Amino acid sequence: MPLFDYEEFKKAFYEHSGIDLNLYKEKQMKRRLTSLVERNGYSTFMDFFRATLQDHKLYETFINFLTINVSEFYRNPNQWELLKNVIIPELIEKKGSIEKIRIWSSACSTGEEPYTIVMILGNFFPLQGIKILASDIDLDAIEKAKQGVYPARSLKDLPREYLERYFVKVSDETYKISDEVKKCVEFRRINLLSDPYPKNMDLIVCRNVLIYFTEEAKSKIYADFNRALADDGILFLGSTEQIIGAAKYGLKPIYTFFYRKVQNV
Image (cartoon, rainbow, N blue to C red; front, side):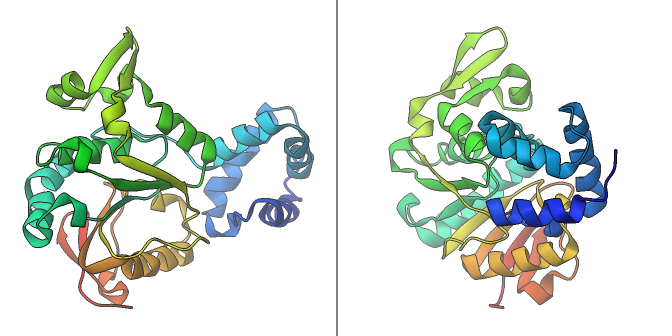
C-alpha cells in the first residue's frame, strides 16, 4: 500500500479532531494504521480518512483503534495491592476523610481502572462518600465504561471478594458492575496532549498508555501531571513505564511505578 500520503493524512486528521499523531511513535502508529486502512479496503490513508467523514461508525472504529482500548481489572495485581496497603492509607492519614482525597484516573479506557480504584477505596469508606474523576479521549470507551458490562476474561485478576461484592453475572462470559460503584465515578473526555488538566489531585493514575507517545509528548505530559498534582501528590504509572530523570519533572520515585511530587515545575 502506498504510504506517501501519511503526512497529509496526519494534518487533515489533526484539523478535524484536534488529535496530533505527530506525538505518537510514528513507526508503531503507522504500522497499526496501515493494517486498519488495508483491512477496510482502502489504498491510501486519505481515502480512508475521507470515508470516515461520511461514515460515523467507521470513524468511531478508527478512534477506538487509535486509542488502544485494552484494559483489565487489577492488571498487575502486586501494584494494586501496594496502592491498597500503602498509598491509600497514607492519603487517608494525610487528608483525614474521603471527601478531601482527590483522585483522577486518566486514560481510563472502558472503566476497569477507575472502578478498581473505587472498589479498593470501598475497603476504607462507604461507597456513597466516594467520588473520583476518570477521563479518556475516546467518547465511545467512556460510554462503555458508564454501561459497566465486562467480559469474564477482564476480571481474571480481580480478587474474588470484589467480584462477589460488586458484580452481577449476566451470562457465562459477562458481568455487570453494580450501580453503587458506577455512581462513584465522574467521567469526562480529556485529551492528555491538548486539554487542560484538573488541579490539586492527590493521586493520578495513568497506566499503560504513555508507551505509545513520543519522548517529547511524554515530557509534556509528565510536566502537566506535576502541575495537576497537589503538593506531595502521587503519580501511579503502568508496569511497562518508568520516568527517566523524574527529578526534572519535580517527581521522585517512591516505589516501583509510583512517584511523589516534590516540587513544582
